[in-house]
Length: 499
Image 1: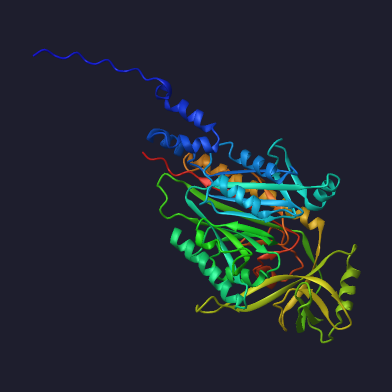
Image 2 (image 1 turned 180 degrees about the vertical axis):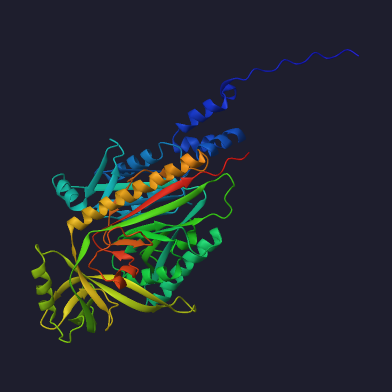
C-alpha cells in the first residue's frame, strides 16, 4: 500500500510563536485591565498570569489634584498600571466638603462590584504621589492653609491589595435609627465577624481586622467585645473616629445611607485565612508594633464617685478622686493644677483608667477583662474632674498621661529596630534553609498611612513601656490609643517547591 506523504506543519505565527518567558515578560508590564483580559485568552496565558500573581501585592498612590474626579482617576490609573487583582480597596480623603459617595461609586465602577471598598476622611495622608512618585506626608491643617490660597482643596490616598491565601470582606456595625439596644447590635457585629472568619478559615478569629469607627459613635465598648471574642493572634488596627462610607462584596450588607433605617457606627475589613487555598500558595503573616507618644505624670488616683452628663456635644463623666493610699477627696481643678506644676510645658492631658469588667457576648459565659482606657481631660472645678466619654466606675484607678515628643521619638526608633531585626532574622533563616520558604516583606516600610483621630491597635507589641506605670497597667489590654502610631507589616513565605 502506498504511504501518504506527511503534511507539512503550519509554522507558528504571531503570539503563538512567542516562547513562554517572553510572554511572561510582556504580561508583567501590562496594566491591570489588559492583564485581566490576557488571562482569558487561553489556558497557557491564564497559567502564566497566575504565576505572575502568585505572591501578595499591594499598590498605593495619592493625589492632591484639587479636582476630585481628576484626583480619583490619577490614583486609580497608578495602582492599576501594573498587574493586580484587587481583593479590597481603602481610600482616605482630605479636604472640606468632600463627597465620599462620588469617590465610592467611582472606585466601585473601576474595581468591580464584588470588591469590598472603604472610603474615609482622614486628618492627613502618607504615601507616594501618583504623578511624581515622590514620598510625602500631608497634614490636614497644612493642606487647608495651602488650599485656602487656591480656593479649593482635595486629596486622596488609594490602597488596593491582592493577598492569595486570604479572603477579605467589609462588615458593618449597624444601628437602627429608631431606639434599640446598641449593645445587642455590637454583639451581632462581633458574631458577624466570627461567622465570616469561621466560614472562610474554620477559625472564628481572623488574621487581621482593619477598623474605621464612626465620628459620633463610642468605640470603647465595641473594642472590649472584640478583644473578648478574638484570639491573641488577631491584630486589629484602624481609625477610631472618622466619616466613612463602605461597599461590601456581599450586597445584603450594603444597607446604610440616609434612605435606610440603619446608621453605620463602624465598619471593618476582615482578613481571614482561606482553608481551601491551593497547595502552591504560600503563607502570609502580619507583624505589628505600636509606638506611643504619651508619658505618665503624677501619682496614681482612685475614683470615689462618678456622674455622667450628656451636653450638646460629647458625653462627659464628672468624677471625684483621691490619691492612692490617701483619704482626702481632691477637687478636680486642684488635681489638674498639681499635674501642670510638674510639667515643663502645658499640654493636652488624658487619664488612663484601669478597669476590670465582666464581658459577655450574646448567651456566652462572661469573662473577666482587665483593660486600660484613655479619656481626655476637659477641665475641673472645686469638686469634680471632667473627662470625655463614659464607662468609668467607682473604685477604678487612673494615672495622668501627657503628650511627650521625646517619648514618641524614642518609641519610633524602637519600632525601626524591631522591624530591622525581623528582616535580619528572616535573612538568617534563609541562609540556613536556602531560597526555599524564605520570608520576604510585602509592600515596603512604610508604604502608605493616615493621620487618624484616635488610634485603634489591639494585639500589638508595645515598644516603649513607661517605667513609671505599675505592673497592672502594663499587663492591661489597651485597644484605643492617643498620640500613638500603629504599624502593620506583611510578610510572605512561598510554598515549598514540589519535587
